[in-house]
Length: 237
Ligand SMILES: [Zn+2]
Image 1 (cartoon, rainbow, N blue to C red):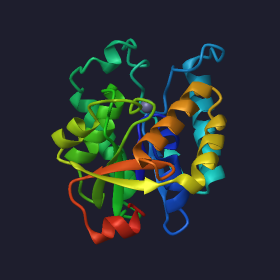
Image 2 (cartoon, helix red, strand yellow; image 1 turned 180 degrees about the vertical axis):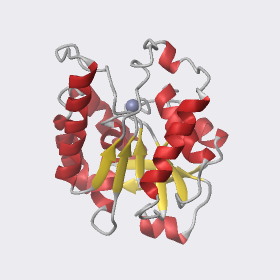
Image 3 (cartoon, rainbow, N blue to C red; image 1 turned 30 degrees about the vertical axis):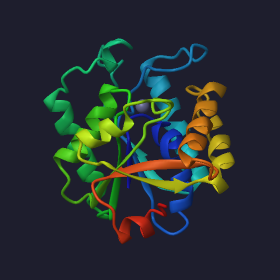
């Protein structure tokens, strides 16, 4: 099970891994903040219309990737009245919102009890990403093993990835080589027409090449511990 804050987070951050995992496992995606006001300037819509459009983009991505999932209806930071500066300013997480996120994650996981739950590291300190991460950490029952992904595009050229992972107790990096699906991952990002530009795709590619260290392209996950199960089930190097 993979959990993201916003429609496009999972496709950007671990879209390649999902395309690989779904060949041997039932992969389910949950996106929590389905009520949204963020879009590219040319897509000026009201909250309802834009939220529908973003959910539709996420649905199209899941269909194309052939994985299941759902988009929740929590209001994102802009809907809650935060500015672009405030949403990454390290504000205190509202306990009611954290509880709602934890309940939504638990309810989604309950019918199938995942072996792994993949959460954002919350690089870039976006408050919605922090809520998703901390909700999973606070209520891990029924989620299987917790593993954390590098949030793109925030992760690109970011110096504090290792430190952030260490702070939440997930200091072991494991990489998934996505060389054979990178072009497919980048092509599918064009489904997010209200959100993403060529610059996003460029950063995704650059980050994948950077962390692959000469071995094509990779996505990186962070875990509290290594083990045979992680290596085999998630296809990590
Ligand atoms: Zn996001």
